[in-house]
Amino acid sequence: MTKAPMNGEERRKQIAAAVGAQPVTASALAERLGVSRQVIVQDVALLRAEGANILSTNRGYVSEGEKRCTRVFQVRHSDADTERELFCIADEGGRVEDVSVRHTVYGTLSARMDIGSRSQAHAFLQRIEGGGSALLKNVTSGIHFHTVSAESEKVLDEIEGKLRALGFLVEKS
Image 1 (cartoon, rainbow, N blue to C red):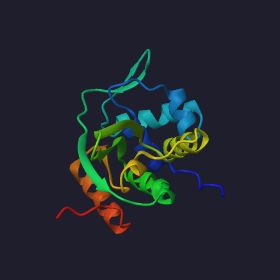
Image 2: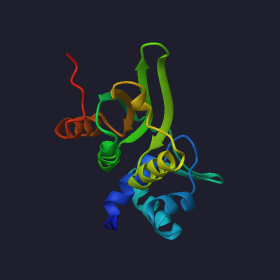
Image 3: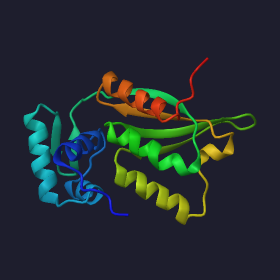
């Protein structure tokens, strides 16, 4: 199945989500998003024109003091729905920072994910499958937590609504 090409607005949303405190090169962004380095350079120029605080350094692009909002979502779904969950978050402009589970014996177990695009989600799932590993959520009854970051609380609200609509969000009682 071939995926539809990402339009410029979606691509710029992914770039803005990917640029943070740690430098990321235009080449790395181009590879992640399936475009040329020059397209990334042009997109960053457009993002700057729109007011994004993106700096160019000798190590790559960084966000200039931009504070991202974060929220922890408690979710549950099948292994087969992991891709839909990650795509849902990335498509709305969120970045899955980590995953954690609360194990009755081991306590809280967590792992960094740093997924902010469909291509990163796809690569993550390929590493899970290729490494003969299981998703961390399978250590418990499938309930797990994601710390998600986004540019605003509004974006996090939209992500929460989409996760709820998909039936993935575990409602707190």
